[in-house]
Image (cartoon, rainbow, N blue to C red; front, side, top):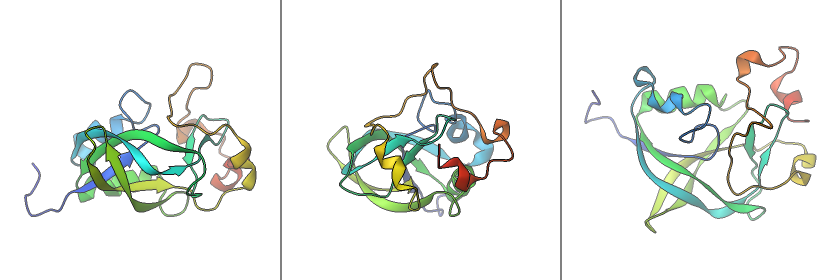
Amino acid sequence: MLKMSQALKRVFVYGTLKSGEPNHHWLTTKTNGHARFLAKGTTMIRFPLVIGTRYNIPFLLDKQGVGHNVQGEIYEVDDTMLSNLDVLEDYPRYYDREPQTILTDQNEKLECWLYLIRNYPDALLSKPLLSSYHNTPQALYSEKSVRDPKIAAKDDLSY
């Protein structure tokens, strides 16, 4: 049970953590901490969202004003869940996170944590810019555990 003294945070998810996507189980596994769906939302600022690797992994690139207002979901999480999401996102080594204002589908503005990549090859900006991520049968997402162990995260970005 969630302790009332623990401050909850909001996280905006736009990729594999969304409902129906491959990593959504991270948000629903109770041992990972508390997570509660609040609303669908869209970034107030445009960002480039690309499929960054051959593993169908979505990257939100830190290039504000480029791309689209990205669609996703807002969750309320406790510190334990946020820590586990940091593990999944390999924060701060791979992804970084920052607070961003998200517009909910009820026209409410909420401050949420948002994971993004700050250091990326410029070539990623030439990929198709998406407004929403969906795992597709044509390019299935692969968990880190089944990736080629010879490929480091830094090299992963070049595909």
